[in-house]
Amino acid sequence: MKAQRRNDVLTKRIAERLKEVRKSRNLTQEDVRFHLEMNIGRIEAAQHSITFATLADLCDYYKITLEEFFRGIETH
Image (tube, rainbow, N blue to C red):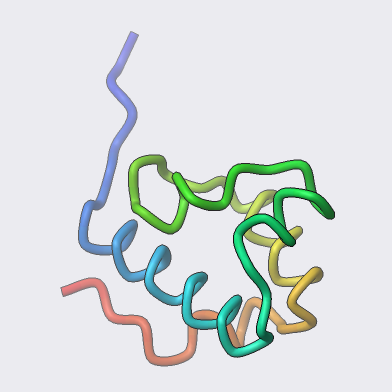
């Protein structure tokens, strides 16, 4: 089985952006955990790669489009 590809730069940028969006909405990690039943702390710490489905759920929760979320994120 082939190892999963991981882009550490992109993973870190996504984690930073998620944290920024959450804080801009005055939400705690516990708020997100309670409402979505997901440990956002590990995602925001870039300890885990995030799936597109999870990212879409978070964007829906934060009321932001995927396009808005990715605006300004660079991978290099």
